[in-house]
Image 1 (cartoon, rainbow, N blue to C red):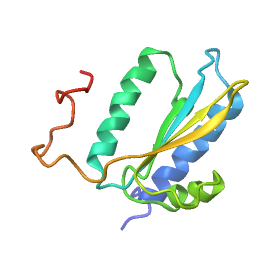
Image 2 (image 1 turned 90 degrees about the vertical axis):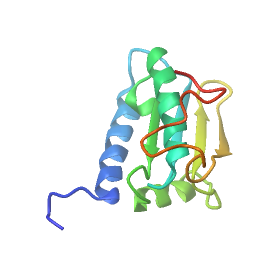
Image 3 (image 1 turned 60 degrees about the vertical axis):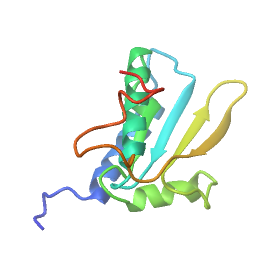
Image 4 (image 1 turned 120 degrees about the vertical axis):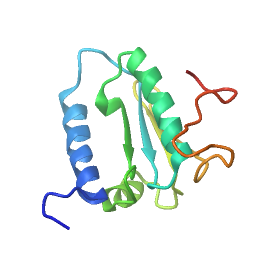
Length: 134
């Protein structure tokens, strides 16, 4: 492996730094929730769910730091370390963590389905299935 080849760890550390900077820097647009997706590289359905959230968050003016996925290119030490850092040491991957901001702030979690939908063909995603956005 060359020194410049990106690994799941280097990819997620870069995201973590960018996420941290975004949270500290703030934006002109207040967005009431931060969505964290924690997944592994094999969790294609969780990745598709993330992409659906990203489309909606972008339409609503959310910034990079309002929606982020860790572990997308394989489980990383960043993804693993975030769970206990958030007070969620027993959280299973893949999961969605919603951090609500404001007067009634809170942290909510949801387990996401592992792997991919059995009836998806290689290269397809979940868009077009009932309940999904196009």
